[in-house]
Amino acid sequence: MARTKPIMVEKFAGMIPIADDRALPDDYASFCENTALYSQILKGFAIPKLLHTTTSPTARYVYRIPNDYTKVGLYEPSFWMEFQHPDTTVVRAPVTEDVYDRYYWVEPGQPPRYNTAGRIRSSLPSYLLGIPGPAVAPGVTPSGGVSSIVVTRAYLYTWVSAFGEEGPVSPATVKNGKQDDSWAITMTAPTAADTASRALAKTRLYRTVTGATGVASYFLVAELDIATLAYTDVLADTVVTGQSLLQSTTWAAPPTTLQGIVAMPNGILCGWSGSDVYFSEPYRPHAWPVEYGVTTEYPIVGMAVLNQSAILCTSNFPSVVTGSHPSGMAVQKIDMNEPCLSRGSIVTGTSGVYYASQNGLMQISPSGLASVTKELIGTRGWLELVNPPGLRAVRYSGVYLAFDCSKQDDQFGGIIDPANDRVAFTRVRNLVPVDNIIDERWSGRALLIADGEVYEFDPPFETEQYPYTWKSKRFRWRKPTNFGALKVFCDDTPIPGLFSANPFARAARAEMTSETSNVRVRIWCDNVLVYDEWLPHPAPVTKLPGGFKGIWWQFEIQARTNVMGVHIGQSVRDLAQV
Image 1 (tube, rainbow, N blue to C red):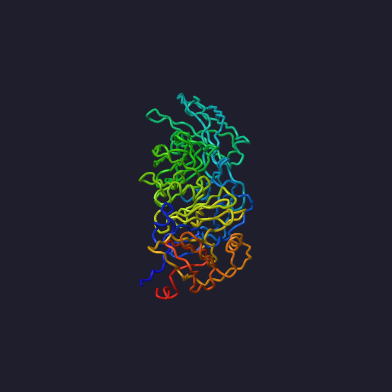
Image 2 (spheres, one colour):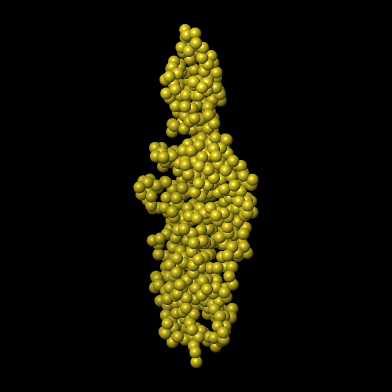
């Protein structure tokens, strides 16, 4: 009599939640959680490793600055910036060979700020971003000349920081005088409000020179210490026109209400507030001319950069802002009503920008807007398996990794790899509540913030695994069958002790209730649980209960070690032949 072939799964894949578990390919999961599947065996993510304890236990965002840029590894000596708001954005100066090594950041609810790396490492106060303009016009008094030629000049001045950042201009003063007059100029000192949290150091004095075409342009006359409030201009026009032209006429500080900033190509910083988008002058992060701003139809939830474009994820239709210079930025609305439900869900990948909407994980690419999860999870499955409004996500090893950080218990999310059909979707559950997940810019690793501590997610050199679950499809036979033997091929991994100072390790060990086994197997026959045991360590061929038959069979592995294959046969002899 022909024997029923064994159930054999030796290459494991992820979930396709939109498919019924009876219609799945044999090696796909009807459910998998905390399972790393790239090697096609079953293994759990490594237990997160403690990297840093924050000074403030309520810090929700960190940014690491390596002490030595030639050694940027995650465990090299570094300074950790801390912020209270999880949506804080930090960018390094988009300035070629910035001798000051400046960093710029926006923490929602606070005005934009910046500081040098040296000052940051020394815990020195940061500066408000932007340079103020003098409110008082200069005093101008020409005298002493004997020429009969009368000229008209306009004078104005600006303030400059210790980093060479020039601010907007003062009101101008226009005077007539003799060509050979000495022009006595007086300037007003900055107020306490002007100097607060700013490194104002110099004053630049400018005057007009009228060219052959009759157009007057402002040229630099002198750069003075900011405490110097008087200057006598005796320079000839031929000398002044050899100096630099005034550039900062329309420069201004960015709005104090910015919600975030991103770095675009060509040295441009881009930020947003409400429905408005703002741009800095190229390679001058302190200068944000008002005329460069553009407006979208709907409030902006968050922003990301893709190639030459800023992707605006809004509360309704997303938009794309494109241009090589901030004076020529064009806004294009994408005609699909897919609102962004979570700023924290926005991630830039190699092929597009991803974010969570009510209909799934959306991708904005040069080809347009599309749902990554429509054919994989479906709208209902998306809403059941994740909580889109609470998601916070990162790009982790090329995949989309997200957690629901809005809860303090039962935090879950998932991994989606749009480029790998076998990984498909894997549910991820935090055994310890985390406050945020961060894409660490220098190492490319994912960091978790939990109760004032920073951990590396899935550290590559840690051996202890998160407990994981992988449940098979429902296998069907044409006639009722009994499977009487089980063989699980797994690594002979030491069973960890119960105690650990690492809260993730403690939670993982408490999750796996057996102190003598790393692998638990559950088997269903016609939807009835018929076997639920921890396997001996190491796992031999195991006899399964008899006395019944069924058409539909399904198994589940819960483990904290690598599992390379599962064979289920009618008898031990069956398994010996495969």
